[in-house]
Length: 275
Image 1 (cartoon, rainbow, N blue to C red):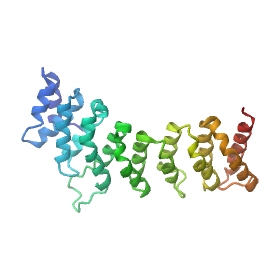
Image 2: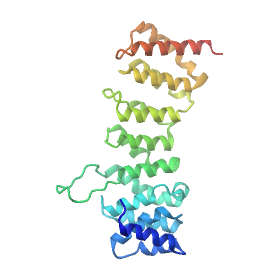
Image 3: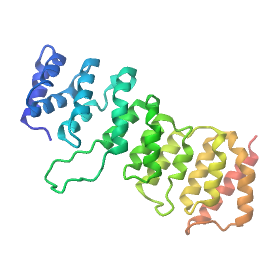
Image 4: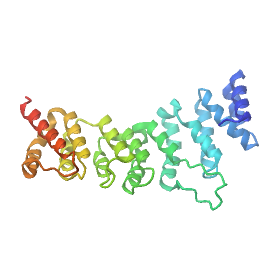
């Protein structure tokens, strides 16, 4: 919620003949509460490079989990200039990676009345917005996924926006054995379906998902992904036929397995009948 100081700062910036100059000056105010209001006002102007660098500096130097740090990263979120400016990305990306690698998502304070504003989620959001230009963040994101960190869904989304082509196995490996309907599964499936590459190099991983998955839902996902690969998916047919012969209609999973089997058989027939 915005307080009266926030609203006054936004109004003054809007009415000022030079709103950027007003905000830059206010960001240097001695009262941190005024600075925090100026950071919010940044959301209502088109920033230039100098202003973004000022916000990044405030973000970098603010105490961990502080409201000032929270406001600073919020101000950066959604800035078009930050998505494509190599100079700005070079400055902020190491800071975001450090947050992903080291920030705790649970309040470490014994006194829970002490303000606690983690930056992890907004950091992954900023990385998402940078897309392929945030490639340096890939190792940190993969570590989050592999360790089943509580921020795994956000890490998966960010990784997908950076470069999904080379990291599809990471997504498939992250599918949990014991949570077929979790938020994580929804996140993985959504990303794979959205940005699935039409590349045949992942056919072995997809076939393995059909052969070993404990959940029919994953097997349906595998068929869906193969269908999106077009003619390249034909290379998966021999292995899938062997799987069908081996199981003879009995599929791994719950009562919906029969429907999954029909979908797999239908897919094989479609591939065999296509030119």
